[in-house]
Image (cartoon, rainbow, N blue to C red; front, side):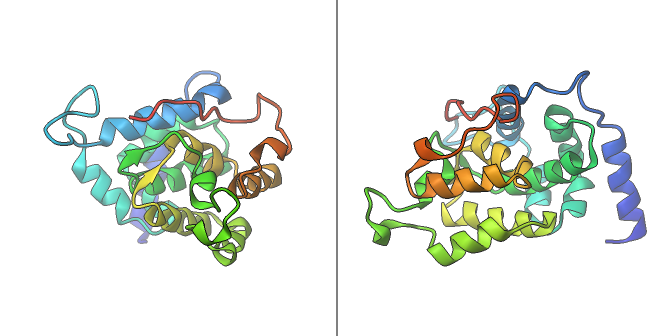
Length: 209
């Protein structure tokens, strides 16, 4: 990316200060879902967002982003950061990653994404995500690496994913507990996973659009 583009990214984010006090963490998943929904075009003649038009151009630009800095240069990423940002640099980068990944989601689901790609009813042959790819995903750490890994996961799901759950995972992927919960959910053992402080998590209890 050129120096001018990098400056643009900084300017975009600079105008996107988070809401006063930042969004409450149990509201972040819903805020991410609303942002995603606002960009979606009409389906079968029926609008999926209040404005009815969506924003195909913005979605196309975000889908072409292969790095977080490219995504950060987009106006829609700044709008997402205002909804989910907490004012720290790490959340800024992860919000850009989240925007680039959510642009590939075409349908919202209620099932957690890890559960949906893991073995069903104890049959490992039914897993959409192989154990090798699971290990690679769990080891992803850099922002661009996380972007690529989750974009591939959404593609594996055919563009269907729980938007609020993705927000929770991507914004908190630095946490070992988050990655551990993903692994437990993959094996349909989420009830046995260690629980986070309710104030530290992101609510994923949102209805599918």
